[in-house]
Image (cartoon, rainbow, N blue to C red):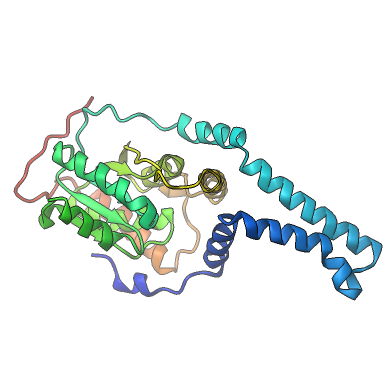
Length: 284
């Protein structure tokens, strides 16, 4: 049972800044506007008219534009995308799991995730579908019900705001039920970070990617791919991809306490509680 207070936590300042930055990068016209503003700001504000300030702001404007263009250039995107996917194992399609876990990323990405999860469940790859993500968990469950998936095969949590919390809160709900092997559904750029994070929490993970929305503009796809590469680097530097024994920071926070308790629960969980339907977990 997930602590309801976790859903009511105020967002951290870093999370708010990161979200704002991500939304800003998704609008090219705003990026160009900031670049132009940096170049011309010294001519508008009197105390910035000194030569050293003019040079600094002009260089910042040029560097920002160059960085944005390089990050969203098709060749750059293709290289990063290939790198993010190169280390993700393929789903052989012959190994069953204890649960299908869907990670949310907002309304535009939801339909393809729901379609993939419903297909996996109907193929009897797993008896349970679990949706994770603030603003997505409950909505995904409702869309799956609309596709004919019974309510007793569905569960969700709608408190997680990050990939780490996706894994942590999912573990706190599923591992006490004996869920060890999961089919993980998310988009390809997000998959590597997600697989490593869920493994960090003790899951055996079978990646099964969903597709990008067809109507998503190329530049937004490029920003998303670049964002995920930075997210992977950030998680690596913070030790979030290391074995759980290495995670010792913030021991007094509610999230850390939940993380510690989930480790103990997972060690004592061996049987899978799945309702009336039974599934074998066959190795490929």
